[in-house]
Length: 110
Image (tube, rainbow, N blue to C red):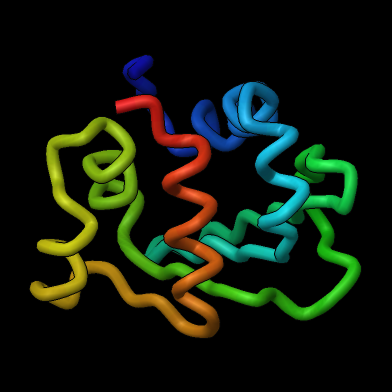
C-alpha cells in the first residue's frame, strides 16, 4: 500500500484505488462521511455504476466515521488496526457499519 503523508492525499487518491474494484462496487453502493476531530469533513458516494464521487453527497450518509487525522492515517497506513481503534474509542462509527466493512474489503489491497 502506498504511504500517504496527509489524509487529503489519500482522499484524492481514493477514486483511483476504488477503480480496480469498480465492478464489485456496483453491489456496494452507499454514501460515506469521514469527520476528523480537527474539523475536516470528507464525503464519498459509491454510484450505481461503481464509480466513486467525492464531495457533496446527494443524500444522507449511510455511514459516518469519526477520528483524529493522525489515527485515520495510521489506519490507512496499516499501523493501527481499525478494531483496536474502535475498542480504544479512537474511532467512532455511526450508521450502517456493514456497508463500511464491505467497502473496506473491496478496496483494501493489504
